[in-house]
Amino acid sequence: MPRNYKTTTVFTKPDPKFGSLLATKIINKIMQGGKKTTAQQIFYKALEVASKKIPDIEAETELERQEIIFNQALENIRPAVEVRSKRVGGANFQVPREVKRNRQQSLAIRWLVDNSRKKKGKPMHLRLSEELVDAYNGTGTSVTWKENVHKMAEANKAYAHFAR
Image (tube, rainbow, N blue to C red; front, side, top):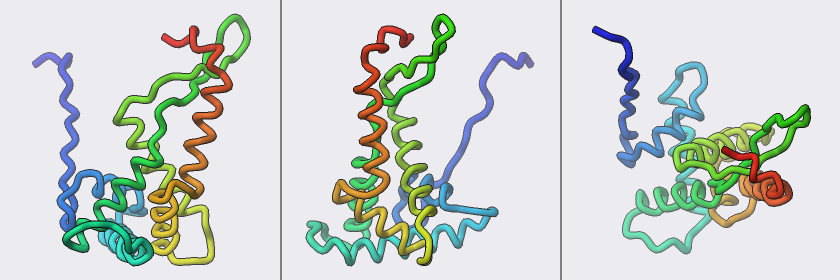
């Protein structure tokens, strides 16, 4: 059989609590050393703590409140544009580009988890919950990261004609 077809299909199962593929992606990013159960516990505890910190969400059940929190937090972190380095005539230019939906999601998840890991002195579920609450409110390290990326893209929009 010829090898010119794409066979790498990734089957990810939705997480057991929310039935959400997005939650699974966050859990997989939190996971270290293949310890998925530990990563799930961290994520679920973080959402419980975050849900208590944000009492004014209109939802019927606690699960819906938590799902609204992590969806809105990731929506607030998601970047619309980014800069890519491009070499033109011996000089490197930071060229702004639109970000595709899948990359927006993966960048948001990466920034959320990495910025939670950078904080020290508390258990991971508390650090993650703080980052989720901050992102939900439109503040925090991850949102600042997104804003910095947008500022860089805005500052370098003169080089947008180099984009392909």
